[in-house]
Length: 70
Image (cartoon, rainbow, N blue to C red; front, side, top):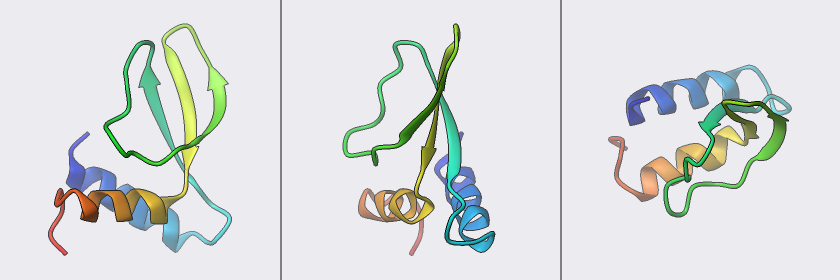
């Protein structure tokens, strides 16, 4: 997923309301990028883990690391 797509998905989650997070899947053994927000573990599968993230924190992380134009 590109930073632009991640930003777009985070913005769409924000538009849906305050109680809506965004879900991302991390493959087994895959590490999150440094400083990436902590998420709530929703499900563990054989292929990876599904987490829910606060879209505001994801957007802030993208901006902080200059991965999107502000």
